[in-house]
Amino acid sequence: MKCPQCQHSSSKVVDSRHTDEMAAIRRRRECERCGFRFTTFERIEVTPLVVVKKDGTREVFNRDKVLAGLLRACEKRPIPYKELEKRTDQVEASLRNLNKAEVSSNDIGEFVMQELMTLDQVAYVRFASVYKEFKDIDQLMEALNQLTKGSNDDEHQ
Ligand SMILES: [Zn+2]
Image (cartoon, rainbow, N blue to C red; front, side):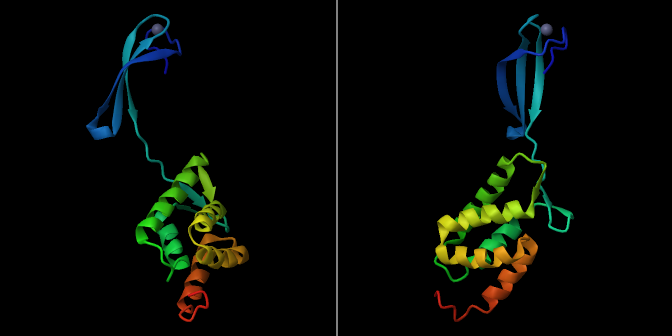
């Protein structure tokens, strides 16, 4: 943030407050060289997470897909829905923490595996056995769907 007066690149924040109900932060800054005071607005930007699929096509990250995948993997397991929502949030947070403009569907699969590993062994094995074959989240979800459809007499129950 350069000083509008002298172009010096270092300033200190002398006051900071939220505006429009937290969507922006207004900062009063003071140039560390010439003492000039100016105001900046920082917008909290929710950037869409872009997912590169195995075939090279891209789509915007869809957390509902992750949640649906977790639901399928955890079908008939004693896991509350709230817990799955929490794990979905965790997967999204992990993806954003990669700090990459684009993530791969592989990244999503890995993080889902991490969550399932600590959540439920049966769900983890279900997911992992299918995941290893496909390595693509969309194919995987489809396969999981098929798997759980036919799991009424699942020996793990
Ligand atoms: Zn200055």
